[in-house]
Image (cartoon, rainbow, N blue to C red; front, side, top):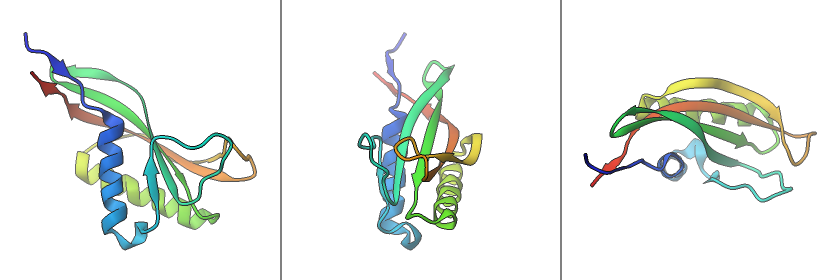
Length: 128
C-alpha cells in the first residue's frame, strides 16, 4: 500500500486567504496567519487553526478548520469580512459549513469581539 502524507489544512487555507488579501480590494490590509501573539487583540487579522477531522479515503481527509476574524473595531466590517472569506472558501474548496459565523468575546480583551466560523474541507494527501 502506498504511503500518503496528509495535506496541511492550515497551510492550504492560509495560502488561499493570503492570496485573496493580495487581490481583492475589500481585503487589502488584512493579515492572515495561524498564530496570534498572546495577550494581544489584533486588528484586521484572520487566524486559521485546524481543529480535527476524519479520514475520508486512503488518500483524503475531511478536516475541520476554524477561521477567526478580528476587524478594525466595527461589527459591520468584521462580520462582512468573515462572510466574504466564507463565501470564497466555499467556492474554492466546496467545503461544508460546520459552524456558521458567530461573534465571540476576544480571549485577550473581553470588551472586544471576534467572529469565528468553522468549515470542513476535503483535502487530498500526497502519495509516495
